[in-house]
Length: 211
Ligand code: T5A
Image (cartoon, rainbow, N blue to C red):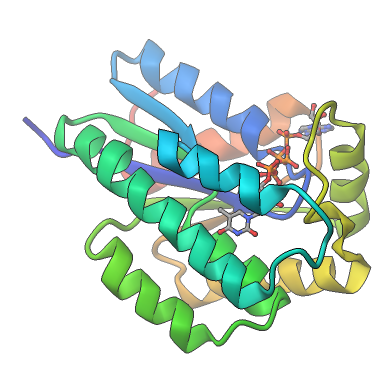
């Protein structure tokens, strides 16, 4: 059986990742592929419990280093129990946020030492790395406005302030510049259909998918 593919969706708040992830999953399924759609923090039972801890409360409830460790505790469980087994069965895993969110939120925007994050990637992810990462990019004000309109959202990270979110945007763009083979920047401004077409073009081109 062939190994599946691992696609991650990344970007700041309200970029439209969750909306587009559902559309991509449906499109891949319509082509007859087995698809596992998942998210971080969370995606496994244990990781969803950690999500409750990390997304609720005041903006300064956790320090960036503590957040990094919580994210990686959740990520290890998710990788072990959901992502690796799905890939081994040949499924396509589409994941709403993954390791680049830690690099950008806790690292570039939060100030956690990149060497700690790199060490966690090495020891916790091992060989489980995305084949393709779609980085949704849009002006901070537009993303925060969209995120505030969304019903029932946790607001701990949204409430961190404009400067944090500007560092975050630049952090994601820096990741894309550093790893152009893995990352594609998706312009997240425009209609849902226009953004969907950009996502599909990137998946077709980077992963040699027909359709
Ligand atoms: N986090 C996560 C870390 O700090 N470190 C980590 O390592 C990880 C993994 C997750 C939080 O955790 C942090 C980052 C996050 O702050 P979450 O609630 O899952 O929290 O938050 P997000 O992933 O940011 O989810 P959002 O819902 O805010 O953003 P999405 O998924 O990018 O956006 P989406 O699709 O929900 O859309 C938001 C709104 O915009 C509309 C949608 O209808 C929706 O109302 N919309 C559009 N409007 C106009 N035009 C378009 N093209 C639109 N696309 C969507």
